[in-house]
Image 1 (cartoon, rainbow, N blue to C red):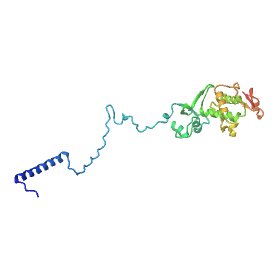
Image 2 (image 1 turned 45 degrees about the vertical axis):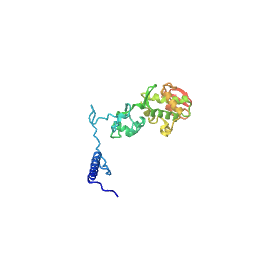
Image 3 (image 1 turned 60 degrees about the vertical axis):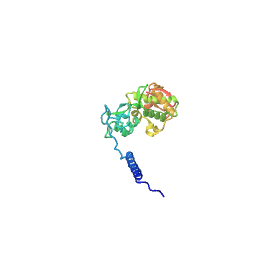
Length: 257
C-alpha cells in the first residue's frame, strides 16, 4: 500500500500531469489532425483549358503534331495528274470508265456529271497515269493494250508469231488512217470490221504471246508494210477482200491495202 505523499509533493505531481496534457494537445495541433481520423480525399480538379502558344491562333493545328480530323479531298486530288478524253460516237460512261481504270461512279464524280448521257465532243477529265505514248504514234491505256492483245489472240492465235504482230500492226494502221476511227475501241468495234466482236471470241483472255505481239506492234514493227486489211483467202469468198492489192502473206493471212 502506497504511502500518502505530503500535500506539496501531490501538487507538483498534479502540475506535471497537467503540463504533459497541454504539450500533447499542442502536438496534435501541429500535425494538423488528431490520430485515428481518416483524411478526406482531395476533390477532383477540372481539366485545364488549352491556351494557344505564342504566334498561334485558336483552331491552328497543335504544335505537338497530333493528327486532326481529315479534310475532305476533291475528286481531282485523288489522282496525280489528269488529261482530257474527248467523247466520240459510240462512247459511253461504261467504256470510258473501263478504258481509264475507273468505276462509272468515279468518272461521274470526277466530272461532276448528273446524267449518264454524253454528247459527241464533250470533254471529260480522266487520270493520265493510265495513258502511255507508244513509238508507233498512238496513245493507249493499259486496258486498251489488253484489248489489242485480245483481238490478236482471237484473230491469229493459231498463226505464227510474226503473223500475230502483223494483225496488231493492221489494227494500229487503221487507227492512224483517216479512213477509219482514230481510237482503238472505234476501230475494234466498227460495224462488221472484226468477226471476233460478232461471235464473242474477242472477250477471251489473251496469252502472253498475244500480249508480246501487241507491244511489238506498238513499238513500231509492221511486217505488213502498212496494210489496212487481212483475211484468210481459203475461207473467205468476199470479192472486195480478194480485189485488194496484196502486200504480204504470212501464215494463213493475206495482208492488203
